[in-house]
Image 1 (spheres, rainbow, N blue to C red):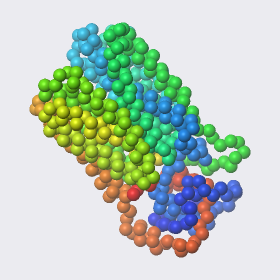
Image 2: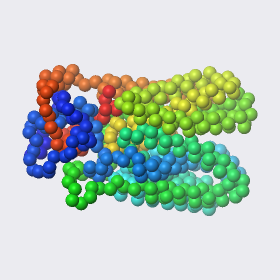
Image 3: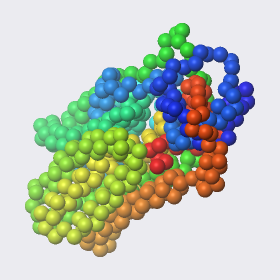
Image 4: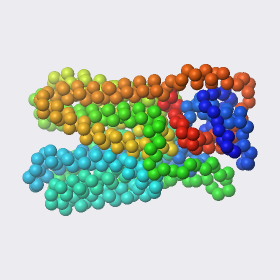
Length: 513
């Protein structure tokens, strides 16, 4: 690697503690010097990395490990609040729709576009957020996002038409929430490694918690201050995003005088090389198909209950049941995924969660009374919470921290298209057939299909290597008593620089089982 040495591919070596040394966890680093590794040692390092699945090192300051605690808990709290605002706010503003209809003389479909634009901005501006984070860092972007989100709601309280509300509440507030949501996940990933699945689960629980809190709060504000006063107060609440941004303290670089780490390759504002990663492509396709049907049942379950003759209050209580179960399902799923024996199979666990969710939709279509819908909401809440807790954890495992900021932006952009297609397509099907069962069947089929795309793609395209490579690996395997010593600086430099230089794609143990 140094002095122009390049490492061949497809060989394995067994050495004592090699995996740990590759992560820099065991033996102290060798003294710095210009000497290079022998070519055989270089090959040994690469073969060891291939055996480990080529884990990707954190993009934070070189030599800084994820604390897995400490200030990370404050970062987790901030991510919990940001996730809650980002996902619950588009649903919470719906409590003001009737008053908006009365004041502006418009239809329900016109007001529903406010939530749709909010969600579209949250998902569709992913690449823009990636560019901003890679250019300015997480904390400044989140501070600007918090100000934008608040400014949008405060400006909306002075609007005189529905078009102005689209611009303020939809575009400006949606962009502000997007500039908070994505950087908060990136910071969470940098602060947690071993406990990352649990941290993701706890952060994802912010969505159902804030939904249960913001909806009644919005109704209370509307009753006392009207929709304009309610929007003004909610705009003030969104300034708490700036407080959360202040918690996103960057990890400190090594102190002066300590051994300098290897130089990282130049960073790209939007790294499109993730599309060369088969694991990322499979994940993106599966996630896009999943989103087509994932959000459809919560949108139609209340109307489904009313169509069965259930009173309005009991029908609305179905969403409360779903949200309550979701609160506990997300951290539980994160904790289970973080177990030592489970984490290497997180991709397959995510596939099971998607299949469970789709199967719940298919069986829920057979519900013929209120009791059946209650059972459906309980199981849907469990599966929906599992999906919510695992989706970004699996993406982190696939691309690693170094490319996560670009990968999440591109995935959210693809999902934005699916978000705009999924619920409206369900509505079109309902208008054509007037049968809610068909809507649930369509949603379930889409989510089940996505689970098969992910698990089969991972098994056949990632989990298996060519037979020739395996035979070559076995042929070049050194004697068991070979003492292989590896400079941790060489390993770290290879992990960060060499794969991109050689045009290779590296997968983590979580994605190559």
